[in-house]
Image (cartoon, rainbow, N blue to C red):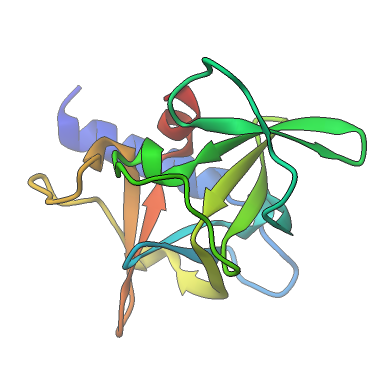
Length: 166
């Protein structure tokens, strides 16, 4: 199987997994957009369970590098990962008043993703999804599934499978 065929299959699987809401067509995708440094990322809105302010994270000693710790959300312990570290950005675990934890339900497992700021929810047409460039300046281009090209910006859609494996 060629790389191009594998990418098409991957893109087709991604699009088939996106859930259809009653207010959009099957050709559209809703993304919750957030920022990490100066870049905009988006994950499928149907995967998002909650957006939380950053507080009360219990540090897990000697855990994986990207794991910040765990939170107790109404009696459920949820791992919180630092999205910056998953992307290879080596900065201190600093948060601001704008920082948020996205609670994502991926493959029936709740995980918190620490982001710099939540921006907006956008609806895009699926034909705007393109594969990442072969030669990218992004530090961890293996973490990028697709790029949504809009008129005024690009939204990077992370590969959640790889994100949660790291």
